[in-house]
Amino acid sequence: MAKLKTVDAVVVGAGFSGLYLLYLMRRQGFTTRVFEKGGNVGGTWYWNRYPGARCDVESMQYSYSFDEELQLEWSWPEKYSAQPDILAYINHVDEKHQLSRDITFNSSVTRAKFEEDSKVWKVVVDNGEVVNARHLIMATGCISTANLPKIPGINDFNGCTYHTGYWPHQKVDFSGQNVGIIGTGSSGIQSIPVIAAEAKHLTVFQRTPHWTVPARNEPMTEEYERSWKDSYAERRAQMRYSPSGSLRSVAPIDLSALDATNEEREQAYRERWAAGGMTLLKSYNDLLTNDAANETAAKWVRRRIAGIVQDPKVADLLSPKTYPIGTKRLCLDTNYYETFNRENVELVDIIKEPIDRITRSGLEVLGRSFDFDSIVFATGFDAMTGTLLRVDLKGRGGLNLSEKWAAGPRTYLGLMTEGFPNMYTITGPGSPSVKSNMMTSIEQHVELVVEMLVYFRDNDIETIEPDLRAEDEWVEHVQEVASQTLFPKANSWYMGANIPGKPQLFMPYIGGVGAYRKICEKVVAEGYRGFILEYKNTKAEATG
Image (cartoon, rainbow, N blue to C red; front, side, top):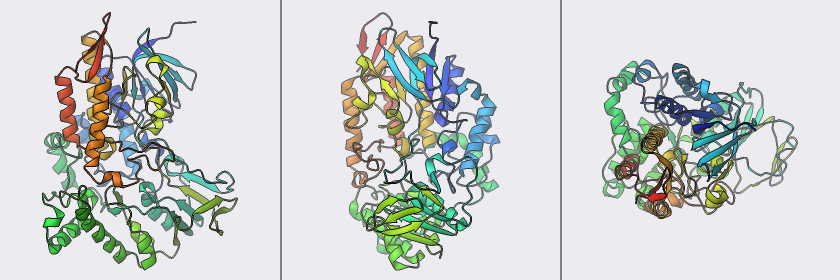
């Protein structure tokens, strides 16, 4: 049997993380193989093509910062970019830097095992290829494995079914159709107004109402675009050390909501609702840490919903009451609540009327039958850990990652896990990831990993993995920081609560992008404190 070729790194995924990794690895002279299950680059934006799919971070901030020419030459058509425009941008980056030539598409890594004798990862791909890699970098994304609910009869339906996370690449025409959509999270909130405007009738099945605020999306103005391009370097530097990895268009108020008068709160919330975007949660400094303060914002938004939705019963169903505003990812919408004033839209509360089963012609709810031409599942993702745990990853002693994470994900800095040397999780659980502008967090993690690989190469370091004590302390720190907020009060996908049987703990690091970056910088400055470095021909050496 021919000897397997060994490369410096295998990268799994060709979204924003994988492309930037490949770009930097090339520049540093590393041999790299990238495997991508999709047919082209794009990651999340390759798969999520559902009607209304759009980013909730402003276009001028949801982009790469590493290429100054790219920053200046690319123009976004809207304040908040739609999926086709983001995918076009990713394809432009790919073409500009000729990245695809080192990417194997339509190929999924099914398993990988750390070979302790040779200190390499043996990576097996579903196309039959086997590759040895000194480093395994999981750039698989945080929301890339769709969650399909286990509803009886789900395979019996004679019509068309769609999941927002695996949308067809050709246009889906709902004209003249009776459509059912299950789920009112982010993808449901974005797609419902678009489908309703096209379909003959749309029935929305809601389990839990979601907090959403207007995006106030608009065409990109030359003035706004120029304001960013003239000061990109300064603004990017601010973004890297900001709490969320992005800059707000409306300044936050450094005051408790409880210290403001009713009139002041009314003005603050009204201004931010009118401005659109995520600014509402920054109205006061304690909306995500104080129940009473949070309730002032929640009550205000409920009144707005009641003022928009004409049917009081429907408005009440659409108003969240069981969890604080912002503790599930706040959604941005365009005419979401207004859509429920349409005569062709019906809302069904599946808490009171649970779905019994899907039938050949539609579905049944407490004996009520609904006939549909199409059913859309807007039922979210097995977030943060789902994709990683679908790969059979075995570390030292044959330990499987699913065993290691049986009680929930365990990482150091969200970047590595003890017992799995030279394996990295880009924006993994325990890092800011989904609680940040993902582009800022992706770039920071990718640059950190490549910096590590260069250091190891230059210093004859063979393996790196977290010290178990450092990992334990970081897991505890992530939960401690989360416990100081209201986030654990919501049964959110941040907690893994949307997946039956999934261990529940707060997965992202909520301490802030800037604070996290400073922690990482200090770890590196102190000789990779908290990691165990194994030098060639020497025993492992703990550095922390």
